[in-house]
Image 1 (cartoon, helix red, strand yellow):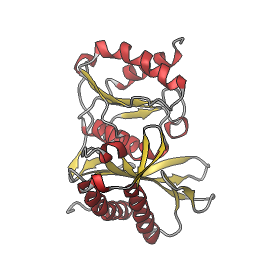
Image 2 (cartoon, helix red, strand yellow):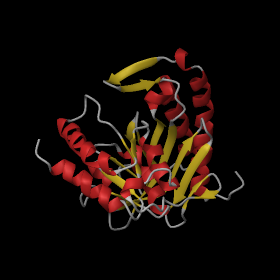
Image 3 (spheres, helix red, strand yellow):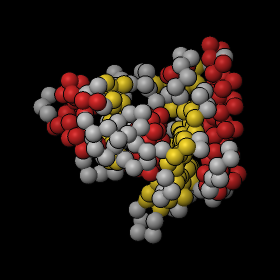
Amino acid sequence: MAFRLSPHLTVMANAAQKASKRLLRDFAEVEQLQVSMKGPSDFVSQADLRAEQTLKEELAKARPGYSFLMEESGASGSDNWTWRWIVDPLDGTTNFLHGMPHWAISIALERRLQDGTTEINAGLIYAPAVDEMFWAEKGTGAFMNERRLRVSARREITEAVFATGIPFGAVSSMRQRAFTRTLPMLMPQVAGIRRFGAAALDLAWVAHGRFEGYWELGIKPWDIAAGELLVREAGGYATDVGTGNPLETGNIVAGNTHLHAKLREIVAEGMRAPA
């Protein structure tokens, strides 16, 4: 990559590219993969585990004092961390296992500030099957490969395409009810709603301007940590449905400057409405 990345982003890009080589080989032989079931509609494959191990080894080698929060192996390292990697080794696992090329590696770098609060300092989302690397660092903008990104400029909700995640049967009844109330309120107003099955890429595509917005409830930090920074650095908004931190509440609404507030209002109404 000719574009000059910062030291942190260089570490992240190198780790993602190394992990992607084995993932691409596994993807080419997806029918041969050994797969076990973690729960309803939530699969983990040997590909996930190998990718996570590669990422952890590469990131730890480059920054040995940093802690980790990883999808498969959880938290590790010092509890009193200043820097922490948040990693999803394979976002869009079900797509991967069905031979669909819409999946990605997501890496975020979280920093603890002197006042005890934290912020996402850098984020990288790499989609190896299409060789699209999305990356951002706080205060420096968002990029895909060497192209600078800006969120969509569309102002009218009737022209908007939004992305979301459809709750599975195993998720809480509150999330299911909120989704089934939000969807009929939103669908008549928009050009389309998409469910592609990879939250990290949904957020990257909002940053790219391919989607006007994205929302999901009850999602994990490793799914959204890198993507929410990408959206903000591309000029958009990525917030909780209320006033909290989406990395803590698991509820996120992202969008461009014109339509984020409207989408957030509709999602909030869906959460408030009676069963």
